[in-house]
Length: 289
Ligand code: SF4
Ligand code: SF4
Ligand code: SF4
Image (cartoon, rainbow, N blue to C red):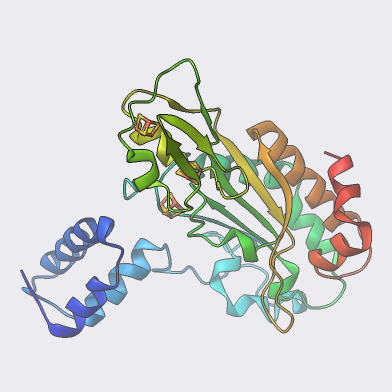
């Protein structure tokens, strides 16, 4: 199928390892419309569909409720039945595109956090708590990434998580000096001298890639974990999220999330989560987990 120049330029901006999948998806859509040339508009429409932004359902309920006079302009804050949903959970697309960096499918944790928000009646309680109009910044933003590359941007969300795969050197298994680990590590964290392997813990980001390429398992992966960050925000005074837990298992991550939700719901003010964290101190929050 032919691609016009603008469409080709857009495709070239897609990361190389998913270009083939994106090309196939776009061409399938264009073909189903009876067209034979892909245009820029086709690529943009396909991208929005892929990101879940297509066909937003307009809110049916709460349409006359003054509290929602601002929020109802944004379909993303309402489910398909028109009920408000005062949280956004954004996973990366690593699992869908067979991303070579993927450590853990982010959708697993997305499902758990979504379930907890429903069980805790987060949306209903937040609606009760906010006295005036509900604004987009009152809602909680969550992002989960399948590896430290953090494509869903957990560093600028209220609650952000990325999967990590710590590694360790197995001194019982002899290194053959192939240097694959050194070439693979983007952080320059691995050194091999006379077949002796060292990993610089300060530089290592726990992506697990060196263990994957080692042909003799001299470097081994430890248990997969989650790195949890809280309090990231954009807006007038943007702030990167703070490290809460560098290596948490799933249960601890969910517990940390519950603590954060409780901090938001139990505070009587309408301050942003970052301000609440700074008042309480992150160390106090850690003690509650
Ligand atoms: S965060 Fe990692 S796993 Fe997810 S899409 Fe990006 S590179 Fe792939
Ligand atoms: S886990 Fe990743 S960052 Fe750490 S040493 Fe291995 S390749 Fe480098
Ligand atoms: S990849 Fe494995 S065998 Fe090769 S140099 Fe690194 S630790 Fe040694």
